[in-house]
Length: 231
Ligand SMILES: Nc1ncnc2c1ncn2[C@@H]1O[C@H](COP(=O)(O)OP(=O)(O)O)[C@@H](O)[C@H]1O
Ligand SMILES: [Mg+2]
Image 1 (cartoon, rainbow, N blue to C red):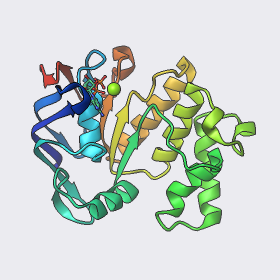
Image 2 (cartoon, protein in one colour; image 1 turned 90 degrees about the horizontal axis):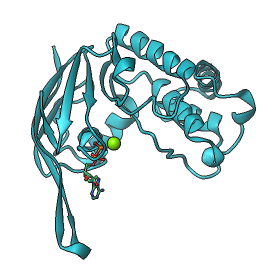
Image 3 (cartoon, rainbow, N blue to C red; image 1 turned 45 degrees about the horizontal axis):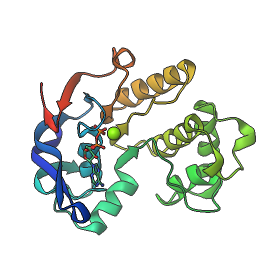
Image 4 (tube, protein in one colour; image 1 turned 120 degrees about the vertical axis):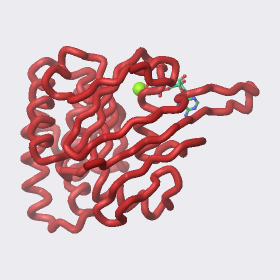
């Protein structure tokens, strides 16, 4: 059963100050089945993150359709869904793990993970228990749980992002280089968490530069070059 169908997705940026157009991705089409894991590889600047950002609607696609089969809304085109619908989907159904930290000011690491559950209506006690479980799972040192994460290292930020997104168990996960700047041991933890999520029928699209890591996790791997899929 299909959960996502992308048809002719294109995105470009117009840099007014330079009067220049930058093509980011062009005519991307593929489908993702429920429970499937698609890997995307390609050199830096190829347009990989843009695809995930269009699905998450961090970027508004210029052309094309992104049909998603939502639990709440049924079939919905993410390239034209309302902001309210997208907020709902990001809260309950679609998880996005980026390499960058996006945390509200004066929010500790633990509160950040708890907030992901609180906004879904979970009670505070359960949210705290689950948050601690996830932070331990991803081996974020306990003495950092009550610290504001803006001083975290790259690897610590990524662990926090993973805990924040995975605690929700979203039905569609978008992973933008989720293993960059992690040591081997933590990479293996991420891999085992992804395999667990896969067993729970989570559908996933992940960008990896580490082909070796994807062995046995991804069902299909697409390569992207200059904004276009090459296989
Ligand atoms: N917000 C933006 N404004 C202008 N150009 C952008 C923006 N986001 C991405 N790009 C450009 O689009 C191209 C693809 O970027 P990206 O999707 O981030 O590549 P990748 O993830 O494969 O490294 C790059 O040339 C990048 O500079
Ligand atoms: Mg990228």
